[in-house]
Length: 164
Image (tube, rainbow, N blue to C red; front, side, top):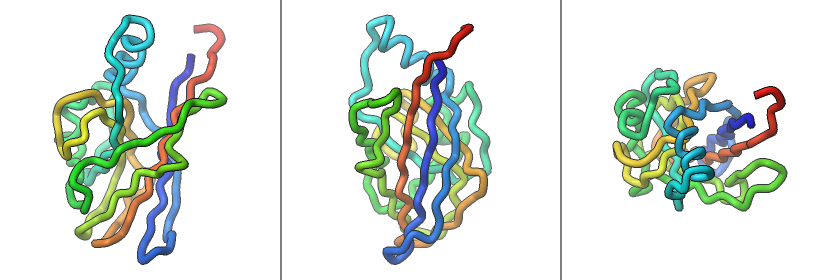
């Protein structure tokens, strides 16, 4: 089985989309272990996943975890929402699951440069508990100002892979 995802981001300023891009992610070892443990070993399912954005020029590593990703990537907390924004996905279809019908919207409250995003199981900003599923470094860093919104869609796909 091949697993992977794509973060699709829309950058909105004063109601207008001013930029839009896609970045493929890294499904980290902690995320892969969680998937395997949940499906095959009776592990506990995560009820809600959350989107986090980060401000450091950091490339996610397979060894990143929920315990270190906030510090490694300098997670951004400069947004209006009181917690990380929930990833509200629809049921899987065609081997993919997505939140495209309910994009995670992050409203900036400062001028910042965003370098990437990740999907984690804890709602608390900069929390070091829970599980990190996936992370991406944007191909190009993006500058936001106060009141800008980043609308984050994450699509996760599983596909059969012959020969594994």
